[in-house]
Length: 337
Image (cartoon, rainbow, N blue to C red; front, top):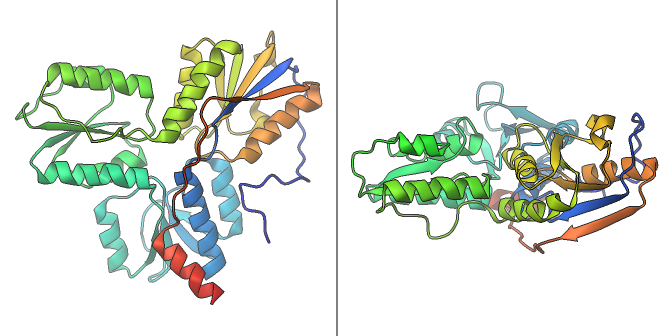
């Protein structure tokens, strides 16, 4: 049975310039894969097993270079849009970030065999947008312009949604009916920054209504909570994640806000020797789309340099799991029959 990209290959090796070894490493827990990312990655892996290569994926399945490259090596073909480079009828996976309804329509017109790997927590936000729009609300979406999740959410009700990124955006808002407003959020934002924006929305528009439950996902919240407690104990926090990963970038910000220097790295080869000058305790965490393999490779780098004290720093225990998409479950059942 092949090793999925969650596995740590025991024979993996790498070389890197010598680094200063911290006396102690604290590993933030929880870290790394969330349930939505695990579901999305498994969806591509299972699709390749059931249908064979190639399997097409619209956008990056998750925002992590390592994951995308491993899936590409296994036979996945990543495309920006559903254009003519995808043959009619081909197996096509939608990423964890979600897509607008127009993408589903285009896929149906081209008779693609679609597998929707949208995170269920993103789907929840989409449903909120649709419901608020149907009820006649203007919807304030807190998020980052250009992010795939934001584009998909706005596509659910493009005539009813206004995007804000900052408190300044809230202050500049002009709406037709201040009594008929609702807000929703991108799932991977800074918990604290989003709270400040929501507070300002409520100050300006006291009648604004919120979703029944928080839109920022459990994994984003938990990983930021772990870093908030970890950072004051460290001189440096290294965050493993790709530059286009919103939740990974937020972890760097949180670490810096709570007293530690912090850098975002794709993998252990990007560690700079000078970062470790004067570092006694190093914190390590990873974004929700980064596999544990990369964390262990980073730890191995410092063990090789002489660090012997490596400790899990657990703040929250997670046990969330999401069922695989129906199309994957059906394909798997058919291939096993």
